Image (cartoon, rainbow, N blue to C red):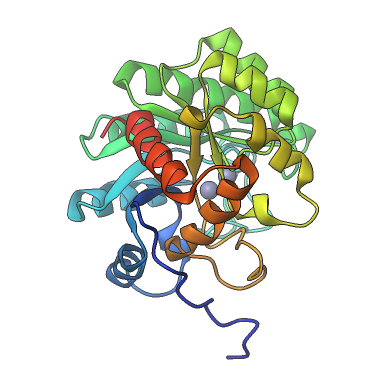
Length: 289
Ligand SMILES: [Zn+2]
Ligand SMILES: [Zn+2]
């Protein structure tokens, strides 16, 4: 393994433990135990495991039932919903190429997510939302229908709503307004600017920042973090994606949360322990644990 593919070293432990509010352990190398042990060693004592399709959501719920340190969120990813309806010619997902299933197949998958959302270890419904980057115009109707259905499921079960918003800020905010957002709504991998952060703050939406807040070209994101109220800020890895600087391109995992949290403390001009204390409380409030 060359050093550019090797897992980054363990950072200095945090003084105050926090949660990784959004991770995909099923897409990382190594076992769940290994990931949790490494994370706990640096003060990342809780993770929210996020499902992106029916199988991944089942796995998230089972894993949360098996480990105290794991909570689950279940959903059809915004790019998964159009694949179910229109088929998956590129075979991006784990199941590979899939037949087009139409609206009935989406309803069936949503019913599975609804059943999982009722489970006690499932604290969130998501990631759901809109992705105008990966899904083209032909998939937008399915994507928006799925998003609206997830909002309804989250509200009916009293769970947190976890939003994936990629290049779709205005439409995500519009759908939330039209449907009425659940009491607890989290923008995962927050990617809006400072203006949007004010809109989210006004609405009481949580903003979860990932490793990309450390990227050199991410000044607008840091400006957003600077104005986001400390009581609405969360931290996440979205691992294995979005590894923070200076480890960009190497595999991400929950144990790297301290790298991102330290960069965030600097942006907010806050003491590291003070920000960690706020983030820990915010994550517990957002997911209701
Ligand atoms: Zn996402
Ligand atoms: Zn994710």
